[in-house]
Image 1: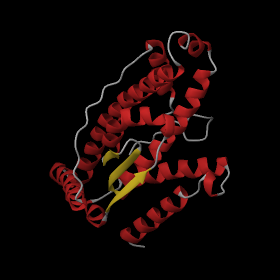
Image 2 (image 1 turned 180 degrees about the vertical axis):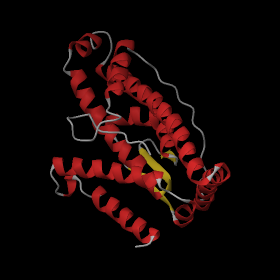
Image 3 (image 1 turned 90 degrees about the vertical axis):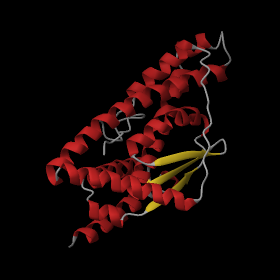
Length: 250
């Protein structure tokens, strides 16, 4: 089997596994196991990408619906997640998130967004059952307390993803230079950036920068959210308890 045929089969398997969701009739355990395998396959694929594979890879656009209450944290940490996944993204309207880039990178970003969403929902549920939440709502509205919690969660994850991006970049550079030499490694990175830029121009989309700031009404809730963001399992496989979804490196 040649390399391109094997790659196509891996991608087909990733898509099949990604389709195994609870909404489509799978049990929660089956869905979590499938998500874990998706992360493993994307990890292997990302580290084995060659210049020939890159040339054959297509850019894709994927639109994601609303993340509900989690949207506050998701939008806050979205820039860090896009850097980590090496793809582009933007918001369309108040709720919809659009991802664009090479297919494996977009799949990874989609996967991570849903892992983070599930972790936040679980951590927020735990927080609302605790005494810190009760005390905070005596001074502020429940909505403002939870918003502060979500900002703290998103801020902590942003910092963790940025640190992971830096570490992974250094590892990738070392691997590529060892396999192909420094000039070939640089050429691969530039070729990927050029391909994404050309694909984005073909969309005809005009983006505008919107400045936003976070109003933290309750510093205690922000701190509890940051602690929760620190508990999201970045090096554990999906399925070891609620909120323990893995954010795999690529």
